[in-house]
Length: 436
Image (cartoon, rainbow, N blue to C red):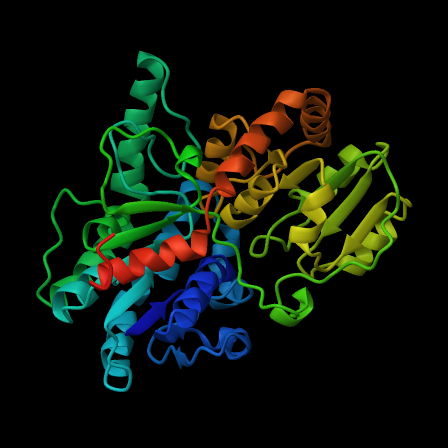
C-alpha cells in the first residue's frame, strides 16, 4: 500500500508523525512525505522520500517573523487570528494543487494529513482518497462541554462561568477565526465545495476524514458530551529516533555531557522552539526564580542567546545549552518549567514529571488549561510570569507529593501501549486493510 504523509514544515507538527511513518514502513508499506524542504535531512535518515512544497509557502519555526514582520507587534486574539489566516488557512489551495500534482508520480492509496493544513475536504471529496487526520495538538473539535478555543478556559463549574465562556465562544468563532474561515471558504468555493454555514474551521478536519489520530491520552482532554467515533486517542507520539542515532544528528536535541552536577533536585527549563527569541518571557524569569534553590537547573534555549545567558548566570547549579536530550533529562527531572508546547507536555507526562506551564500564544493556553485540569501541573496563565510566581509554583509542586503521583498516573496511561503501532493500525483500517 502507498501512504502519503503530509505536514506543515513545523517541528511540532512533523516530528510526532515520524514514528507512525516508520512503523508503517516496517510493516511493508511504501511511504512518501509531502512537506517543506527543511525536513529533507530528517527524511533521508528515515529513508522516506520527500515530495517538497512547490506552490505552498514553507512556514517554519525560524522564518515566521521574516515572512510576516508585522506579526511581532500582535498580541492576544489579534495574533491568533493573524496566524490562523496567514500561516494555516492561506495555503489550503496551494497544498491541494501540490498534492494533486504529486499524485501523478506517487499514486497513494491513503493520506495521513496534519490537521492544521485544512486540505482534508478537498483531498477526500475531489480526489476520492481515504484520509486520516493527524492531530499533533489537543483535540480542537467543538463540543457543548468543551470551552471555546484560545482562552485557556477549563470546563465551567457554574452559571457565571458558562455565561462568560459562551460570550468568549462567540468572540472565538465570529472574530478570531473569522479571517481564516473566510479565506478557507473562498478557496474551497473555487473548487465547488460548500462548507456548512454553521461549521467551524477547526472542525473541518474532524468532519471530513475517515479516521482521526489524536495524540495524547484521552485523560489529557476535557470531558465531552459527544464522542466522535472516528477519533482515536493513541498516546504520546514522540519524534522517531532510530537506533544508534544521536539526538544532535536528528536536529531535535543535543546530549549534554555527563557527569551531571549533583543536587537533591533537578529543574528543567525551556521556552519552546518557536517563541524563544525574547528570553525575558519565561527563561529569564524562571532562572531568577530558581537560581538560588538547592537544585540543578538545566536550560534549553533552542539555539538562541545561549552564550549570553551562560555569562549572565554563571552559578555552578545552572547548566545552559542550545539543546538537551529531553527524553534523557526528564528521567531525573523533578519539575519541568515550560511554555506549554503539546509535544513537550506529552514527553514530560510520559516520564511522570509535573510541570509549571506559562504560555498563551500558538494555542498554548488551551494546552496549559488541560495540564491544570488534569492536576499534573500549575498554569501561570500569562506569557510573562513574575519570578515570584514561578518560585511559588515550583515550591508547591516540590513540597506536595500529590503532584508527582498524578503525573505518575498519567505516565502509566502513556505506557499502556505502543502509540505508533496503534496509530499505524488506524491508518491501515482507514485504507480497508484491517477489520479492527
